Length: 426
Image (cartoon, rainbow, N blue to C red):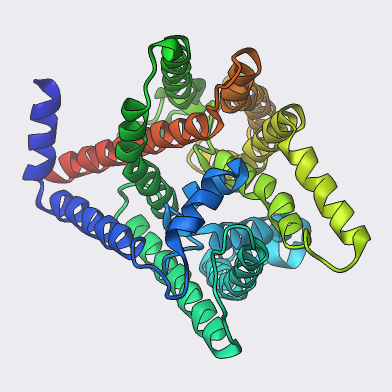
């Protein structure tokens, strides 16, 4: 009943209601576009090809199901995510870019360059995907495609990615969750009815152990993600007393909440984008004329199909990107300067450089726990698959991890907007 009252309260706020309805409308447009196929593709054979390849099935998740239909949204937001990773790495490596990012309006410039880089990346990724599908002669996915048809197809799916980037940014502006994460979330959720239907249709009583295992992993994943996302370390902060005229200000004791997982679901998205890249490129060279290229491509694909190596890489990337993205969004130096400017200090710690070092040390310790836990939850389905023959939960576990994280983020943003409007009312 409390949930119903909360929903009613949300929809009573006019601006919030309009924002939610706008986001829903954008997601509907995305889902409709994801079912508009590009001409010249045998969709049924394409689905069979994707069902036979686990890595491609994971890529299909991040295109929102558009890749399996080879729709105008076939590439999804993958080129934009790749461009974001490239620029965030460059900002940390190149001092000039770091200076630009800290200037007023600098982040807008970086975002603009990221969007521009996404266009050639989408074109190249689209060409690579078509090349890969052409090489699958046993599935007969793409018929004869001349140069004109190829260019039209590439321009179409590149335009689909640009449209999706624009939709994602429009959603982010409404502050009802991150736009890119929501688009991936919508693609995962839209696939759930089909998955349930297939599960029920082919259910065998002998698979009851598999179903129970999946249910246990799902519960553990949900509880773990909620635990990590809600976990905070409260750093005590005191504000010095000062007198202005006949009045005394300050003397307040409060705290600075540091989240265990400041990066949210972004490390998972970045990790999977990277881990899918080598085998995807290797697929292009399986039918090359050079035997060295063919052997190298087969080796890379075999390495990434090894569940142990895949799991180690997946865990390492999630762990590393948790630290990396936290460094991008959390700046101890800026927080220390703001505290000093406002007359605040951490008891027992000198303001300025010492406060910055203290915050950095505390953040590194709590993120270590968050990164380890997030990495373990990410590879939990792989571990279960190793102990249960015939169990394939890699895609299901990753999807569940993203869905839960995105839902938590949406709830938090809606609650913060409601709180802000309550203060405005006062």
